[in-house]
Structures are given as structure tokens and as C-alpha cells.
Length: 149
Image (cartoon, rainbow, N blue to C red; front, side, top):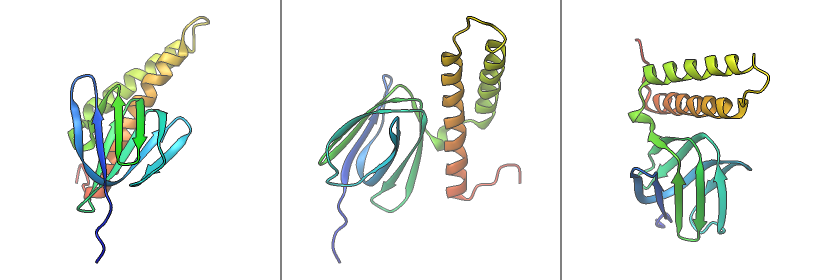
């Protein structure tokens, strides 16, 4: 049987290197749309928007990461993501996500009542919280975890 090709993958934030390993593929939310990078992908650099990164490991498992934004550089044999913030889905705390999303939604509603308020910063914060929530839900579905049961 032919050996599966892999690609080096690294994701780092200003605080830490979140993940550094060989993988089969990575799906990334870019400003131009979602892309899936496989080994020997054409080189590219792109801006990442808040969303969910899906990583298929050498063992065939899926790793889910929430990302708030950043940059990705794809080389023939390596993918490097420099993230503003990134968290593994299994590290996320749903109660904190719900509270942060509610705070962001309240700030958005408040901002809409003022004429000269910068709504873009508030909307960006809400996008990040929604991405964290999507990552947690994808991870739970993948692991067949049903909270509250």
C-alpha cells in the first residue's frame, strides 16, 4: 500500500506554539474563502478571518481549532499560521463563550444606537466569539459528545 503524503504544519500565537506536527491536510478560513491545503500545494500567503481550522492528522483523526485571525503561509512542504489567538476546541469553555458572545451582542446593540460609534470593532469581537462557538460544536459532534444529557 502506498504511503500517504504529509505536510508539516505549525500554528503559533504571540503566547505559544499551539501545534507543530505532520498532517494530511488543513482547512483554513481565509478572507478569500475556505481553503483546504494538501501536501505539495502551490505556495501562497493569505489573511485568515475568524473561524474554524480543521486538521486531518496522520492517524486520520480530526483536530478542530478556533482562530480569531492572522496569516497563513503555504510552502510546498510546510504550512505556517501566525494567529492573533487560537484555541483547540477541546480547551474551550462553553459558559465563557456564551457569556462573551452575549457581551459582544449587547455591545453591538448599544453601538447601533449611537451615530459615531465604531461598529467594526464590535462586529469583529462578535465574529471571534461565534467562531469559538462553532469550533466547540464541531468538536463535540466529531467526538459524539452531547452536553446536558
